[in-house]
Image 1 (cartoon, rainbow, N blue to C red):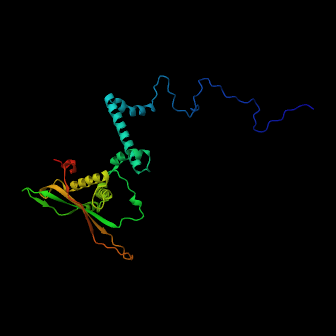
Image 2 (tube, helix red, strand yellow):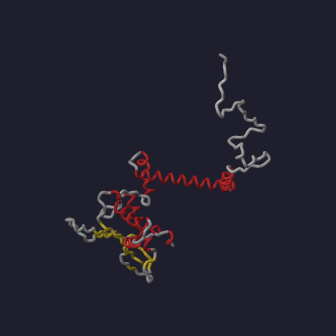
Length: 273
């Protein structure tokens, strides 16, 4: 039986398979279109190409490199000084609140001198028993009048001045909220019941309170020159709520300090003569 080739099916080509013509030009680069979709001609070797990546880097580096060498040195020194100052401040603040260790035992006095009283940290905000007293710090002055005599001013409520500045103020300053209050707490915590200072912190707290008072009063008061000042606190317990059975004496108790002679060290820089 002779071999016979199967007949082609309907629509099947009977001739040899067509082959794609070989490209005569250079091969296309990358994924660029090679057919009719390509509309933009390739740039020739002689045409310049735009450099878009290196331009921003050059523009950003130009202001610093354009400075002279002395100016660059000044900037570098200023950055180094700021970094060292920040490191010293953060280290002292951390050691002040950290548990006792070798550094605090050896350099505790230097750390306290730096931190107190401006950078002191307390945690009374989280105390389970909040303060139940209103403490007002008041001051008066003994002045030298123009005719050579002396006179004593009335008590001025410095806490009331801060309260009036804070009232209806959505963004009160740290000074208005804490300077006088923390200064008085600093004094009370470093003195005994006889107003005797306990260590160097006691003397420092006295100087701090005197400066706060002189900042509020000024060198000139009621037409005379301030020579001495006296400070006192007025403590008034907060009355219990109506539903409480607690009984508290709400009378105001005063703690009056001795007279302090004003020196040039107690005057703010802007008010010194």
